Length: 474
Image (tube, rainbow, N blue to C red; front, side, top):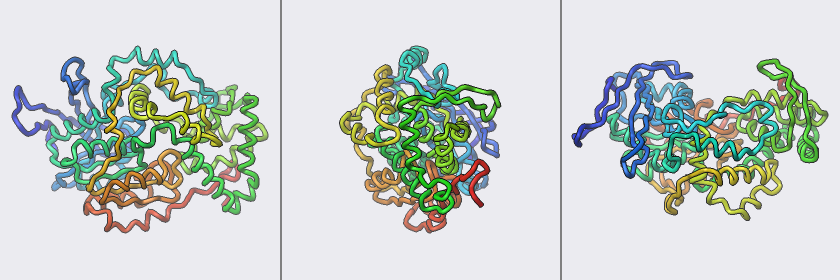
């Protein structure tokens, strides 16, 4: 559908903007894409001063008679790059790209779109994961090193970028897929550019009401409770770990009194390391494992061994998660410190974190970091629920520790033509699992979520628990 250079409609002086696209390869995508840069003003209101490039990648439809409405993929974080995190999803959506273009635009501040990367943005070491520390001097240094006005990196501004790219690519109407934070961006796009949206797919709804990270302690505790309930209902897991819940309580209590020093070999390098394991560090690792049910299945075994002083299984599991989520720190803080943390009320935060394995200190760290960050101030109207009659397919993983189904229900209550599908055995992000890619394709073809037969998505079960280091019991 796309030529090497695409020119927007209209003849506004001095010249219509252009976007040259050339062949490129995206990691995780098995076909060739076409990539280019599109320049916008950092300050879209004044249209003066610094200009930034947005990286645009188009995966052309395989069909010679492609549908006119592409699928735009908006990824999460906030701080992930669509051309990186979205490429694997584009690969999974084979049926979609057989007939529609798929468009990946790195949101301003991410990837190759003037990234707000900070020194030390690399994946934290094992030692840092198990003993996280609050370094406000590092946060201040990060802000100081950025060549950016961090108040200009918010969701409303980013979706106006996206619509400008839509226009220059020549698409009249588009379909939106948003995952995690990307669901918020998709909803904001729907509010600001409703006539341009044909349909919306939201995977793991994270509206502004979620006030990241306030509800994470509550929602991740729910996921942990489900894990232990499933272990108790599973004969093999219950036999191997009859006191699994109590073991975790015991381990966390011991670490709160006295951090544990573990001598362990790095799972990838084999290097012998001495790792200080703190209570908050272990809690943070548990949260990351709950994102992925296959890794969460290691928790009862890992905690059982940790109780006797062997943290090897937990260390290996933590390393398995490493690199799964790559974020631009400056972008993450610019969004969260503008759209989430300022609205957190201390008394509500105290109530929501009480009795959870993450606790209140985890939340307090975000308050402290945002105190050192220059973020935008958004109008109150921005935080209102987004209502629409645009067809919407909402997807949730029942085991998701950060965007569980309750948030999909809340978002869907304001979308009059929506349908919410909860995948019982899935965690954070379900669009690439099982038959869900086929459901997405059928929804895009019909534009009507009510007609979908979703029974295939309801058959997914939690992966088996590890009862030994050899794996699940056969």
